[in-house]
Amino acid sequence: MMAIIGMFFQDGLTGSAWGDWALYTGSPLRAFESELGVQAPVGFWDPAGLSKDGDAAAFKRRRSTEIKHGRVSMLATMGYITPEVAGKFPGYLSPSKGLAFQDIPNGLAAISKVPFLGWLQIVIYCLYVEASGLGFNYIGTEQTPGDVGWKPPLLSGFDGEAKTKKLNAEIANGRLAMMAIIGMFFQDGLTGSAWGDWALYTDSPLRAFESELGVQAPFGYWDPAGLTKDGDTEAFKRRRVTEIKHGRVSMWACMGYITPEYFKWPGYCSPSKGLKFADIPNGLAALSKVPGAGWCQIFLFCGLLEKGLFVYDPSRAPGDYENGGVLGVPNGSTLPAGEAKSRKLNAEIANGRLAMMAIIGMFYQDGLTGSAWGDWELYTDSPLR
Image (cartoon, rainbow, N blue to C red):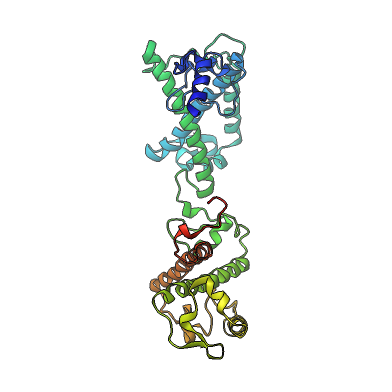
């Protein structure tokens, strides 16, 4: 069915069920696919459909703009790289201002060093190049976009395929340079160098917490929902307390699923009800076996821990409870200081995150198959079955 519909389309558009798509000339996009810049693997790439009207004048205007931006970006990119590699000119850039080339920093920081007359010279020169008859204005002319009448040394004198290859290379390099210079601007503006260390970018609110526990490879400080973008330390500590608490409960819960598969206590869970430990199924099915008094005990025990023993103290680190070390719950203050302590506390957070994922998976698999690692063939209630 897929094949015959495809054959109908290809036959109708090319004249054969497996015809050459080069024969499909009815698309406006075909008007420009023989132009420069149509290169593998993308071919003629126009995702926004700017050329779908087939307007040759509009295409030439966009192409002239693209080439111009590409050339400027290539020069700008070299302007970033050259002073780092080849050094700077000797002498003075502005003798009247006593401004030496060596005094000008590389990248965006140089903007603050350029005197007013320097900016005036730059603006006048750009206007001259833009408005003069140097061949930069193609609109309404028969000129080829990018051909300014200047024959670059080492790059002129080529014809045919060699010329097309070099002109294509210029467009491709210009496109790469436009991406590169924008990346350099961002990295320079945020780190102080066009290839600066991102550790120097200290102004982001996200940086406020990246030295905290739980910042681990490969993600680093991971906050895709932007919950900490406001830099609120108290909100971060509250969320971290909640995360650690949920992680600890989930680790216990995972062990509670796994252990009864290998071992159950002998004797009675509830002598008055005649309920043996061996009679209690593992996992979610156990919920139906717990008597009312048992649920009351569980509720009171959780309340005792939450409101009595493990009360969060803002003066202590998140998850560090005064009674923790005594009761066998992880307690940061009882660990020896240094790298080993950080590693153990990081491991606890990582294991807690894994346990939160694991226990949710166990709940789903148990609820749908009857066991925390049950056979999915037992899930017969789905309408899809």
